Image (cartoon, rainbow over all chains, first blue to last red; front, side, top):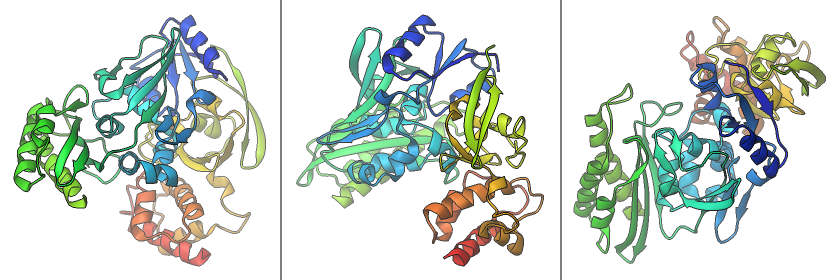
Length: 282
Length: 156
């Protein structure tokens, strides 16, 4: 690793000032489970690292009509908190598919989203739930739907000097789930990830979100697949049709975890399984 | 390159160390503190050989910046036994043959102790999941898992 200066600010204004002073060249650290790897591999060499973990503004979870999760919420918090399991079961489950106990105790919601790996496991389900990112920066605060947050592999809509402070999720209007395809039960990055959220009215689908991860430069909605479900009964045939359309929204690449061909096929499989499960549970 | 003073508690003892920002918790434990039970396996959070408790939770010390441990409580494998009396997990690993080369063992002990602290009667799948972040190249895991289940029973 190249040397860096280390800061551990105690307030958001202090943190934003340090980041502004470095003109966007400083990196922030939360859990460090992605950042430390990049530093050790020499892939990045920032002049400074700013520890976010002492910022109260990024901590905690508020559960009222909405659920607002501080960016420092760890994957363990998401997975194990009884309150979050009750209010956001599909998000809790998604967090549980990630890494190991040791990593989950360190890694954070904000880190997973801002690291913006195409395979980030929290992205598809949060986008499916229409979550909103709360952002603080030198120009003040703003909000951005997570659907618009990812702009490329490892790239987000955060402007230099901005921080994701929290994620807000409206009450779910129906069932949701995250399916992850990976060779092992733990410790693997998704080969394909599918986040699903449905709003059902009687037997018909009133709203659908189908969000694909690990099969494109960013997580993306499979809009044509969503559209084909609208107003329809979730029959096996209709679900199969949506699952096929979902694969068309995928833009996977060949890499060590899987070929593009295989990933496209697995988008169909996971989408079909997920929709069948949600339809059955309803 | 600026050195910072780090003060934190390790195995119940207050420690003060001069630390460079790039140093990880693992570097400081194995270096100035001479607590070499936490092993440097992959140095990238994948193998679990460096597992220690940070504020009561098992973490891979190789991914924690030392300076991030300011005012923290760290527990390493050296403090798991009660003097000459081994922890149930350690005794069970010996009794069941869950130790071959021993490289993964401290990390396994920490992960298992963390599990039993939180869930005193785990099922086998729960044990395997709790140890999923700890790799072993020797044993094939079976004896390690059995040892943790026996330890749970002994402690109940």
